[in-house]
Length: 127
Image 1 (cartoon, rainbow, N blue to C red):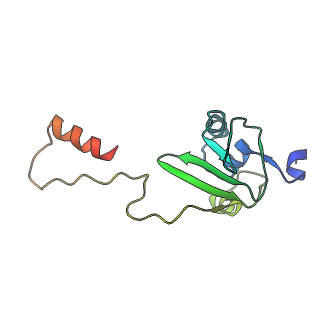
Image 2: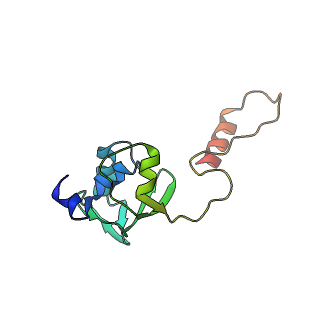
Image 3: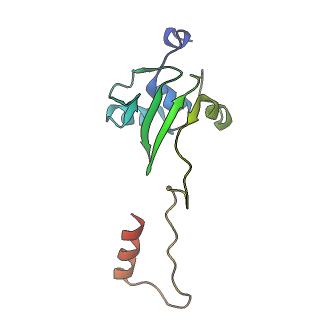
């Protein structure tokens, strides 16, 4: 263990990766460097910024804006069940279909293939 982990702090990019919010540490680093992550409502641009239990992180994940409280730091990137113990989700419960899944377009059976204009209209509704 490094000195920061022993003192109760961990780099934010490492923590986001350990908690499985990003598939790679590089993606977590890019999100932090681009200013898309806030710690306790303050924008952070340095991947080496330390987080500790009790900090509240706000960041965008896909189309969702996540609000997460750091509960534990973790020592490795483990399985998803272990990663879920590192944070508490402060997001309000969502209604309707999940935001990461676009609603399926409904077309009457037997109406044939959609025209280019109809496809564009469907795409505009989904994005």
